[in-house]
Image (tube, rainbow, N blue to C red; front, side):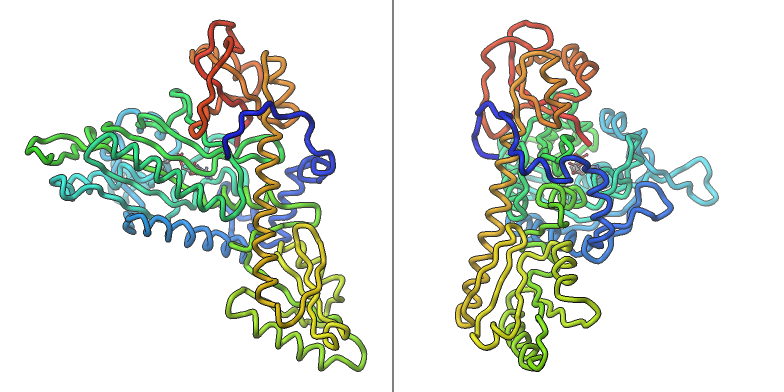
Length: 488
Ligand code: PR8
């Protein structure tokens, strides 16, 4: 999010917060997932949802958008195995401590004692191979990525898309000569993730997690926390600086330019596809259903003929002509089925979040015009056939920008300053995010967590915010400005 440090939360736009997603998020969200063919949660294994045609389509779009940015910046694609041994998995002490309770294990046939660990993330799977691949500075930087599923036996309540046990993500892992190379890589990763999220209009805070909440084995962790209508932030991606912790545990060594030997510096970062999908639905959707940014919409334009007795053929012919002109650039459907009225079709495609709807009746045919309705504002505009492409392009851009700006506004409005635990509690109860000053002590963080039902998510990474006063919990001089929210 941009560099604002205003005191927000002076009352959310009333018209906006009257939306169903703000008053009854779970029901709204769950109904929409099924109706819009995103995901079906009725599969009989908990935490393993079934992605339906539109959900799978959007995941694939996110994947190709992210992967092309990763590959443009020199990340090579790899595919590592799903499993490792318990011995390898236990190499890095903090890492095993963090993940032990969450791993799925496979008992090897005939060898009851030895089990295979199913990846909850791939550090312990990739790094033994990095040890073999890296010899000297000439092999660095090493930058690889893969889009795969990882598996975590989540102990917190599972939730469709937000907290699943089969997690579709992209993970990238890098190795560098110097600490400043690793720092630079952290910034590059943040930039890549920001670009993809901008493409889909998602707003978030980039937060440096407090030490007690960093990734197991990392030196520090940066997270993207997206706002959600129910007030629980949605961590859509994280970037971790691993320092040399894993390099030491996995004995990765290289020969430096001056001939000496040492351990390299590592980073890793993950982008949760299903959580980004959840954020797209939750941040942009409205009472009529999905509102999809053009970059990921399975259907970007739907053409709906408005039948008129005696003009059927010319209307359909004109619809086809329009479709032909558009389909080389956009994903277009001509909905000429006869089992639904135009009104029912409008309702259906609004539910599906299709960015633009074109209606064609006898008037459009005779005038050679096109009537276009935007999904986000439901505004209708009439354009000339000759201006078709440029008008569509402009409307798509405006729609994408409007979604992004509306979401950014909401992010700013949700942040509210608090000066006491009571104030924090009140802010969280109103489904907002509290900004407070904190002394940095874990005791105070625990105190806050116990008393307000939300947790310290961290301090801003992209904006320097200096504390002016005292810790919200103990009253001693504050060391940092942090954000507190409930989370998925
Ligand atoms: C790492 N190692 O593992 P991370 N449901 C949905 N999405 C999830 C879930 C879940 N249960 N758990 C995590 N994610 C590092 C970085 C390699 C890659 C998504 O980091 O544990 C979240 O968006 O922070 C999370 O930010 C991301 O995976 C990375 O997971």
